[in-house]
Length: 362
Image (cartoon, rainbow, N blue to C red; front, side, top):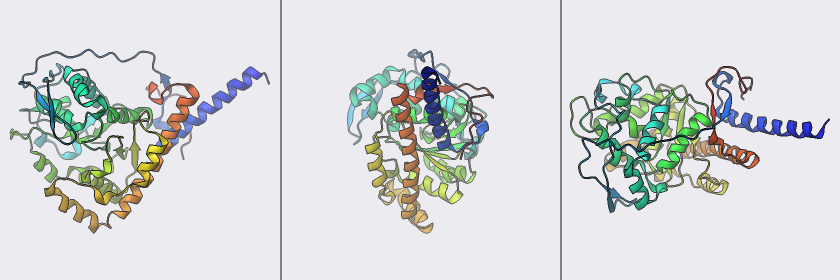
């Protein structure tokens, strides 16, 4: 065989094996997969400077210990974000959903503001958390509407297809990459409907008719009901290097509900931030019984978990999820080493013929 042809064949086989292994991690049926394409044009975002009717004089910035460290300029409200909708009370929790595409669009809008730039300067971009997103973007942009961000973006929200569990103390930047990986690594379509509580709950606590308070929303037991639905794409647990996600008792509760419902749990990560050593440490230090939440919820959640068999079984499940996520990480790192490009730099083309269609997943 011609040496050049032999080399080409070897590299082709290596690439096929890596793509096959990445696809296997999702355990999806072959019809869910489409051809991959390298991005050729970077996304271009223009900062939105439209005045915000709720902007006031800015919002205080706090660090991880909730100490005030500055005051960010008010974020201008995107022109494309509707100012009214049906209201959170109008829909059952099973339809408090947002598409992955709209989730990405929202966070890109946040990142393209002077508010985000200020937060990055005073906190460090990696240290911007979901608490910051709620305080500086979600509340000002939804206040008085009675609608969550998800409800404003889609007045006819469809049923949830996957549950995304995350910590409010987690890194927004890493979470953003983790959610993008649902498309690039797990092959979910961008129109898949997800539940992500930062955007799917109504946060202002303003007593608006047709809106609900946080406690009223929690009383509807949305997490349990969504998981009982056995969502089509299972549940994703987002891990960031900034905080241990299972230190949040509500996340532990969501894992508990997923086990009870018998649905698959996947670990989602930003593969550019984790090392194998960091991941091994995280696997070795799982201890869900140390998770915390607000006092009014702690006893209820702890008793519920204990009644179902205790925390040890949740630790075991978490270890399994993280070992699978580590396989994702190693596959992504191997891809990067072999082809000198990040796995997130490839995306699907929504066609039905193609490269990965014949791959049998096991």
